[in-house]
Image (cartoon, rainbow, N blue to C red):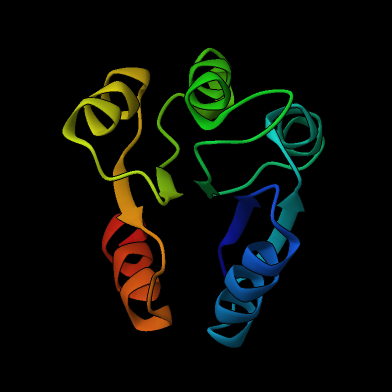
Length: 120
């Protein structure tokens, strides 16, 4: 089964995403912000990343840019999971290399449906 990295500074959101993914049979690597994510995802390759936008230390946009700069993450699906829904922020995410965008609060089925689509 695929290994998915989830990045969010909110422990309750991380827990909800993690429970949803593990319940569907995915392996999960959790990170508290972009800096933590880069370190963990370099040490353990993930098949997909789900990241928040607004986080301390390194936000989601910066994280995407840094991951995309790594050869092993050039084509890895990256989904933004955030409360932001403005078109300008979505475009910023797309420009950085985001594959998709889910607005919080999310339904577990919605998240799993997006994951199935991007992972095939």
